[in-house]
Length: 464
Image (cartoon, rainbow, N blue to C red):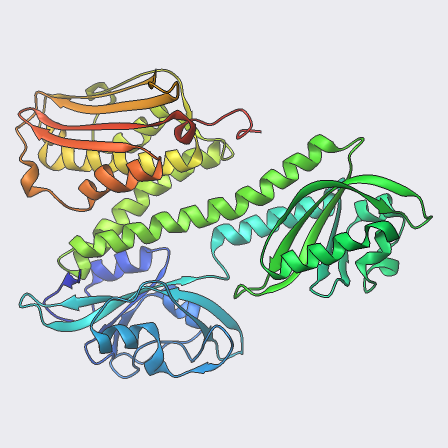
């Protein structure tokens, strides 16, 4: 079992408190009996409650519930289970009930803390608010604005097929006002010879499936028929239950291109939010296996999240279309070395957002290692980053990248098998469907990556 080594549990010092408060997620610690010894402001905000240090146990929530709404005793929470069973509990989920009655679904990631002798002394827990994550809020706001101004008819219905929302484009397309449509069954829009479609759609939505776009016919208020392209997606509440469906209807004779863009955005929002938090959770989990104390853990997580934010800034500035390899190298290395000491050469390749995030983490780990032990730890020496695209035997295009250091001190790879090695050998290559090779030699570190170009390079369709 992987655990953090720690000499004792108590209130952290001022520097550690600052680092904990800077984390973008809720964090708190307990002693081995589950008594809370520290919590950051993000945790207090998630709970809506401030527990009593060294008195309240297991979790700082006012009340807890299971995902199905049943009351959960505090000694049943993921932290209590981790301490009682003396094992880490990954992706434990529950609902925090605030004193004002508000329900906050969250996932918990408790990690045990042990002293130098290996004895259990407590645990540190990371909580992710599954309802109010910043990126999800921004995505929902963006989608709401698109729905209001869309030229497409966007209609939502409950699980029984009763219309619950109706935008202006739906009124223009079908002829019904919102007052006439909301509260009525969606079958009023379906010609009698197409009613079997609704039965199939409701069945698939209840099963959690998304109904892909397909061409069909719908009926206007005046009885006339109109050919449309129809897309149906499940609507879930804050704890993942399916409560209805969203339909996008398009007159395929005049709005086909606009409708394609709406579908793309709706798919990408969920993918990008999940990917961002998956990267953060991976950082926290893998760093916790290597850190010797909470202070070291927090400092390393802080550095890696800042590196991730550098890559994120590139994506935001490019409106999530991606970033070039050269831009990414410069963004991640500039904090460690002058530009003249780092050479970046290769064809201009616009990276996919996923590739930007994982390659950004890889470049950060390489630059950090070099600044501590390698070429960038002393004057002189050079880092060369080169990439190219080649054809495999089966005709598939392969992206190849090499980070190499020259004129640096010799490195012994046996002494450095931490999170950075995991990122370079496993996490980043696997995220791109490729392989990575990390070597330490007479003149410094060398990292080679090979991955299918389709997982690395943004296609024109991706950037639309």
